[in-house]
Length: 509
Image (cartoon, rainbow, N blue to C red):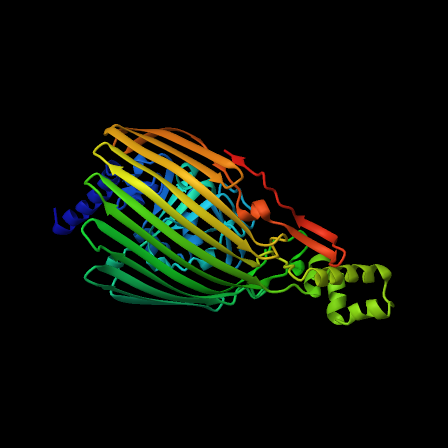
């Protein structure tokens, strides 16, 4: 056999045997677990460190490598990777993220956290993804709990929870940056600097993002944010984490869904200012016992552009809007020289009078300020087969703004007690137990419970049998929201009562 024939024979042999070789190899398809081998542990499901297969709920972890490979530009884009999650554009720069489709333009019942700090806004009962002050390059991983996690993180986690865990300052380069140009006049830039002191590490990040939005609606956005993260160990038994941040900018709001036509859509700019402070202190008592004290403060102010007569006419009647747009003095004609159709004048007068008598009225109801303060003390036990955390916490929510609260400023004081235990006496099974009791001052109480048994026949297979009961207390907006559109401010004649307060809400699952 010639040398060339030998080479040809070997090539044919390789081609024939290669399918057999690949068939005997590990599976070629890539499932969700393939992205998790670098992250063997999670903390968000129980507040305790545990292997993913021992978690009492279904979880997805988006790790650092997946974030880099995804090409995503925003956190909501990353969440499109999570099974069961839906991510929608309310407009170009406003997102709605929900689980199993239970949502409107303001998805509720989904807790969102950054390093354990809740960013759920009680002002609109939803997180504001544009004001988190976090760049994708600052994220280490995102732990997503697909299912109720009220027993661990409280009322907001009624349908699920998302914990965005940022990178430790020691794990990032000393100096780095990025710059992105794209469609819709997108200009994004980010700078980061990290360093080390005798006590620990720190990171300082700055970001600027802006775009002009779609051509049809001009729903652009702009933001500038600065955040600091520090990790210090003053003694061998103490660890302190400090995180601070500010975020400033604007987002164009207004849903692009309308029952009439796209010509009826009205978008408005909404300025925002947010800041947060977050500190966590962990003290080791023994090799198996430690205590943790954490506290944070979130502040957010939303300032929506005022509503004009043209906005109302466009939203309700394109014909009247075109008439008003061609001659803005038409209102004066109706008031002084009623030469137009009486019905037309009546509609215009109703809208104009209601605007003048309700100066706090905003078309999209995103106008006001909120402050959230939270403190929590917990004790953590870590033994060979048993881990447990027990603690208590206090949260105060404050809402301000006549647009959302006709009755004036509102506030809520809540207290919580929680217990979470993970018991693993054998490599073949794990038992999880979680209990949480929440009470709102002078009002409702909520009790949530969860238990799960995880069986591991082998390292690649887990069966989970679980039961949960979740109760959810309402947010500030759901309890106290009162939006009234007045026809005559002096006599309090109501043109439209958009929302009334409901102090007796309690949701169970």
